[in-house]
Length: 159
View 1 (cartoon, helix red, strand yellow):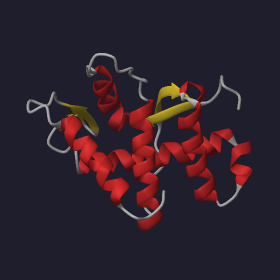
View 2 (tube, helix red, strand yellow):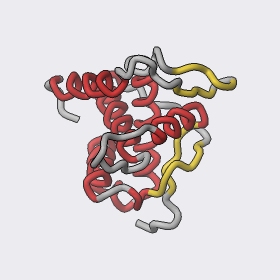
View 3 (cartoon, one colour):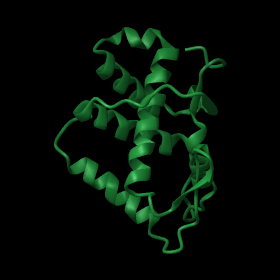
């Protein structure tokens, strides 16, 4: 994969949420991996939803978030597995831009789900069609995110 042309983008609608969550403080000793974990969570949520509902995010003009090569090996493998399952063959691995496009659409759908469930009380419209995340006063956001992940793990359907 040509590492210099493979930007992962997100919609303008959600870039403020990604940026705000990156600002968050982590407990001592934890390493933050940039936007990768949130993007990956959203891609997995979107993929799982697509498997059951067939809903995929519409095309959008993306804002560059990170380069594909900034994902670690495990994160790249998860996105590749999602793309293979979606396309039904391994040829997608030879098409890096298509692989990234699939991940972006699933991440967009996953962020829709995240906003509608966990983030709904923390999100506000910043500008027309753009969202920002308010600082959670109750400090329950991490707990709610963990609960969502646990619920998804407990579902019996595979990725």
